[in-house]
Image (cartoon, rainbow, N blue to C red):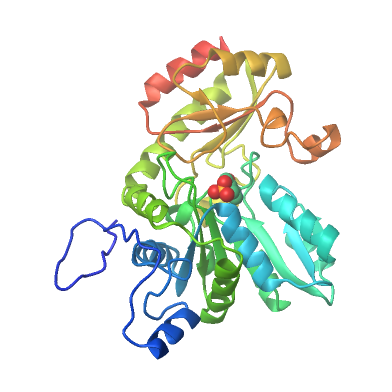
Length: 379
Ligand SMILES: *Cc1c(COP(=O)(O)O)cnc(C)c1O
């Protein structure tokens, strides 16, 4: 993948320069006024736009097949900006129940403080049709759910959502545009935590929203700059630097995940293994159609439960106990005590999580080294 660097007076740097400048000079006030008021005019002030950030936005928009993108300070910055741009008091949202915790928290806030109604569905098209109301405005989905790795029938859900006049938003963080391009399946907006696969090196926090339509892009641009969610140029540069190796990293991650998922499924200490590439996965069929590979997030249940899961996390040496995912290193955690700690027993059961569940984001290490580490920690 190649990031196009902006040209400067005929100088053509091979690597994207960092335009570490908060503001840009003008020779007349009318041009400055014009530049400040549109997302795609001359560069005026970095909260409104910046050449380094713009290069990243173009690259991600191309990858997702969108008309434009906005890079933000975090994945939550992108998600919040899109929700604020599309929703007002009294609107109704339909969302899938297994959502990233931060997104659930924003939806709860919009509901409690601003009167936005939210209905959660497990993801079937019938449930979506039943959940629709006259004031439903937005459908919010994730390509691959955390940590269950359930895969929605995105084309069918987007078709129903579009038919009902909803804005269809898909968080594509777990798949990345290499495995799935939701705009091609009917989504209006794709959001990413670029902290994860796009950046890929656990060295930057960032987000990006990609748009199928110009109007959505303009609306969201206003939210991003008014609420201050814009990406910093250095963070955008780190993300763009990482993005160049996304295809190489992700191919290795997916190949490693296959080896580990298949061996975990055979291991006597392990119960259910959830990875969409396994024939036993409930959504294997739809995943095979929708995704170009099955991803590198695996969750599995340690049969003996909570204490055994804690012991496993203490015993791993190559895999690391840490939040986050999508980086070059393999990370493991126990959702019930970390990403999903707010849920009670019933909530955990509904989310398909047990106290022995481990989520693993597979990195680019040697597969045999990883397996030796996991087998030792399980043993
Ligand atoms: C991490 C993550 C987010 C939030 O992104 P930040 O960059 O941490 O703000 C949103 N959605 C998903 C699916 C994530 O994994």
